[in-house]
Length: 344
Image 1 (cartoon, rainbow, N blue to C red):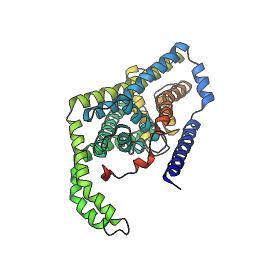
Image 2 (tube, rainbow, N blue to C red):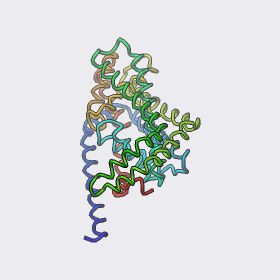
Image 3 (cartoon, one colour):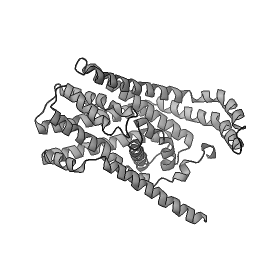
Image 4 (cartoon, rainbow, N blue to C red):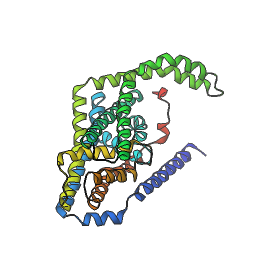
């Protein structure tokens, strides 16, 4: 089989895989229930929900652009594709961090940034996101002290702690990536003993210090950039607190339900959704909705209202954006994703 036919076969397999994964994600949405839920709210509220959700998605994607553009001049379209693809992958693998593990490859493919820079940008994005999410979830726990069942509270404490720990570890590891140099020599010696591919592995291990140092430099550049940190944090507040809080508040108002004080609502949502980090189901599907429902019932919200609110919030804020990410994921040349960073 010549190169042209192999490339065509690979492309067919790629689109088939994309179609299968899209079908899986689509299967997670209860479409009949979705239509009936939207029918229960006013037209004005439905329009407001869609508009607010659109703003939230754009801001979330802009968080990628903020970091990428501080390192290299990056088109916003490339940042959009990067964010959407990572969202899509997040809903195919257990734990939200799973999708972010492929982010460096996505960044490199969509922006042309060197792998070392892509690792640095992706690491800072993951670390800051996890740290901010853990902090906000912790505030939600503090605000709900004494109101949640012990078992549920323990699960949320665990997931919140994991977010905070993950963010701290990623950022510290990124800053100290140059420490890889101390073990690169030993890896190179061991790699040379591997049959057939030993020389190739040893060559890659030899380049680790340079690759890691370059990534660490990107980490430091971004973390010392107040514009990048402040802009990213502001984007997080809008995309993860204000927009979801406003979305659920609009649904509550439409159903005649209130939660006092309303300002606590965004913190409760982040806390309840923190279980997405636990590797239970792909994208936290099912587990997240069940946990969030249990949290708000414990806080005194009627079950019928919170089931509707959580479902619509997850649909507009998570599942539909992930589905949109399916299309740019088809543009990914998977053969390039497996290229060694040493080829840079």
